[in-house]
Amino acid sequence: MKIAVIGAGAVGSLIARELSRYDVEVIIIEKNTDVGMGVTKANSAIVHAGYDDEPGTVRSKFCVPGNAFYTELAKDLQFDLKRIGSLVLAFRDEEVRVLEELYKRGENNNVPGLEIWDRDKILSYEPNINPEVIAALWAPTAGITEPWMVAIAAVENAMDNGAQLYLETEVLEIATSEGRVRKVVTNKGEFEVDAVVNAAGMYADEIAKMAGADYVPLHPRKGEYILLDKQEFSGFVKSILFPTPSLLGKGTLVTPTVDGGILVGPTAVDMPPEREFREDTSTTFEGFEALMSKALKMTPLIDFRASIKTFAGLRPESPQKDFLVGRTNIFGFFNAMAMRSPGLTAAPAIAKFMIEEIQESMGETLRPKIDFKPVREKIKKYADLPPTIWDEEIKKDPLAGKMICFCNKVTEREILEAIKKGARTIDGVKFRTRAMFGSCQGGFCMHRIMKILARELGVDMADIKLRSDKSFILMGQVRK
Image 1 (cartoon, rainbow, N blue to C red):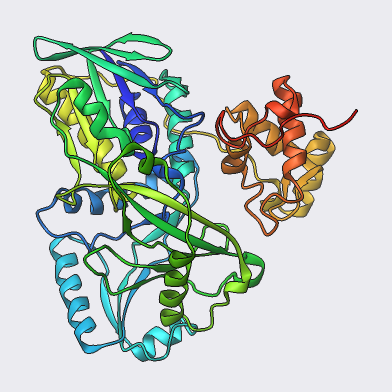
Image 2: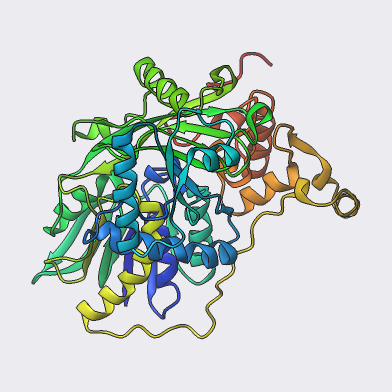
């Protein structure tokens, strides 16, 4: 059986990795220059506990088991996962009643460890929370990760197990006959397939329409974010802080990042469904004003003068505000679409479910590989080693001590390993190593990374892009 997975975000990548456990031919088709560069690249990076999803929804079916799968997944794929817990804060009596509803909903969804805390317990644990808080819902299984690394690691492991990755490959047509999938036509050739898994993020509805398959219309919901410097704000809060949720979602959060910074966001603005808005990651003054106001209500001592980056992400929203996952009216065509929050959390469970769907609907049992390799080796982070061991590494390999990014202590050897693993752009290196994620945001290291990329890829520095062919950094040489 030959199966195409369209989309290499967190959901598509984990589905491809799960498929690679079996004796099937797996091809991963991604229109971007790297994996994880769409919806996955810019979101809150939260592994949600699962109390927010209404019982009976598809979201509630996959969130809690998806959360549980992350422990083993992070161990096998060697990406960072920190279960720091979350607090939903209430400042008024009516908000306390919402917490009680969330608590009951969480119990129905089998979320473990939920507690409602009073003011004293909250402030003893998180002293920088606004002292006007009166209660909070504590969820210990909530965590933080790096969504792009989930996708990168899953694709690397899938490829180690035989999957093929096609980047910068845009789907133009899905050919069907007699009600079943036959072929995926792209800008780089045609692929005859037995099945297609549609995990195309913001464009999943367009992919489904190509096949004449079931779909829901999607529109982008924009979320803007502010990142604060870890040099000044590391440890400001220990857990993920949420306001009491509204109809638009979980609200603006204040959370640590896995490398020690503080992230504030998102806003939630529904955009029109047209294609130009599905790529619109522009930021707004109004958005940042709203973020600062909401964050200051929860944590009055936060200082936005420590901001080092602002950005926006897009997530696919649909009228039913729920996932559309599984088989469709077209034989061999499967959807993993409308992956709004908590899509990242649910992704591992959806990947396992997709195997069941494919087997049941196509009437074919997939045979597990006896030589499946579950572990993916991450790039060694030399700065995390004890100094004496790092010294020994430098004696064996001087590039393990040649610092390229001083903010996050990334060496040339790590940059080279990222290129070896597939990085071809500045963002490809950045997201694999955390170079340029620090205080200077690349101001002191981007040119060094560009030189290494140009040297290793055998191209001119002007040919090095930020993330795509349209994102030039240099236009050419000024003088010789």
